Length: 326
Ligand SMILES: CC(C)(COP(=O)(O)OP(=O)(O)OC[C@H]1O[C@@H](n2cnc3c(N)ncnc32)[C@H](O)[C@@H]1OP(=O)(O)O)[C@@H](O)C(=O)NCCC(=O)NCCS
Image (cartoon, rainbow, N blue to C red; front, side, top):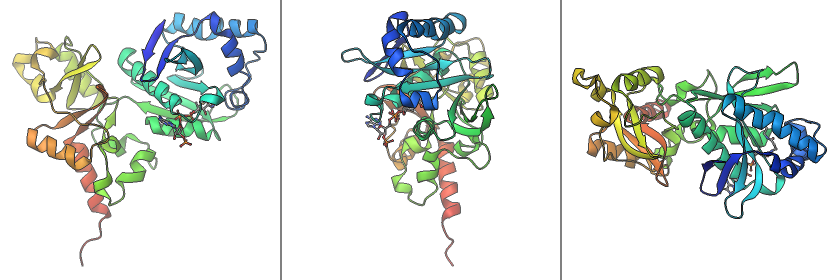
């Protein structure tokens, strides 16, 4: 069954027919080195692995590994999905591609869609990922996705592993940098924002990715609770996978809104930004439209949100870096 569709990929649940592919993938040298030897040597081993692993996980937890295929030609290239392990309190993100399909952005595309699925469809607020200390490709991918390194752990007394986490909060009360543990910042933030090169900063570098959303029929009290939980003042409203408006804390706080649904109090026809827009452009749009936030859309899909707070936070950090005139 198809679970997710991206620009180039189709992600579906694994089934026993995928045994030949799984046999190949689980004996790939990088899998053996970075994921481990599952002892899958025959087609029957592969069928058993699928049945006792991914299929059982979907049955028991409603999540699992997705077979990842090129939509064009339905070519299987890897697996990517959400895993609930007994050894970890949080659901974790896993991915692996056959060597031929690495280095083309497929893992990022599949993992990003899976992350959004976990947050928006499965209601997860925190998703983790574990990697070997030296799995540089995996670490690079996790940082691109917005995961932040938390600590080194051991699972079931095995080797040391790096634990990364992704928090699904929409807007952190203290701005993007405060979502990270002390001293650790996402690479994207380190690279551009801390320099003085403000004109080169794009919306993507400042926005909060994968914001928490509301639906048209979300009751206003639920939207208020959601905003309080994640510490934000705006929720994008999504219907049929598309952005249809934004609801603000001001709109839901009115006494007269308490028995209504989000669709009745939201603003529709809201201005939006694109990830590649310059930050000044987004700031100008917010100023001219007199709005405090812009949903960020890519190919019609909601990929983030940027607020006046994010822009001010950027300006403050830049000001701290600029030498004062003597
Ligand atoms: C971890 C793994 C899935 C990463 O795969 P990947 O293909 O390197 O990851 P991405 O999809 O992010 O691709 C990134 C590369 O594609 C390139 N690329 C090419 N076209 C691209 C596109 N259209 N979009 C994005 N990136 C593209 C990028 O430039 C980047 O290359 P670079 O790192 O040399 O700059 C892969 O290495 C793997 O399967 N490893 C073995 C199993 C494993 O370790 N799993 C993780 C266990 S924790």
